[in-house]
Length: 196
Image 1 (tube, helix red, strand yellow):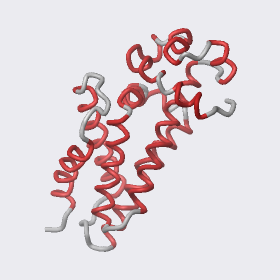
Image 2 (tube, rainbow, N blue to C red; image 1 turned 180 degrees about the vertical axis):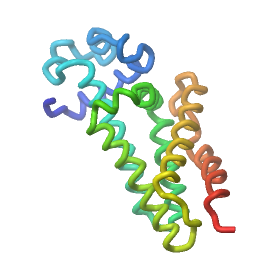
Image 3 (spheres, rainbow, N blue to C red; image 1 turned 90 degrees about the vertical axis):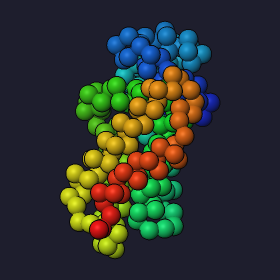
Image 4 (cartoon, helix red, strand yellow; image 1 turned 120 degrees about the horizontal axis):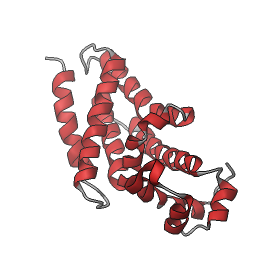
């Protein structure tokens, strides 16, 4: 894939809506061209086909999500406060770009064949949360848990809750109040993580 300008990147983000509405198999280059207002020939200049466009869209979303998560991790506060900020950042990314969020979840099976996207998912959520859980355990903020399982459970809680709100929003952007949803998720999660 060739380097993509910021203008082209912005225009391509509209393609997520087509993938979300039609699914990967139902999406055509012509529909992507019409939606993004990028000629088909230009799309083929930059990408080998729609799978590479999908890969770009998911990678772009994950890159933006990772930036928000990184800011949350580097923020001040305890491991518990930074974990809440990470959950809020993840949900905020979902609320602000619900179409790409739906595509990511709809194409989870395809991600196994796109190792760099799978790695980006790990970098955007799993690795930072695992580190925060380890820090929280080390400083006695959290009880001792299996970090891998706890990270997966928290990821599931965040993603499924966010997806529920994305679907319920019927296309609104933002799709939901990410802070309120994050507070709800963290309240439930921390009931099980805090020391008694």
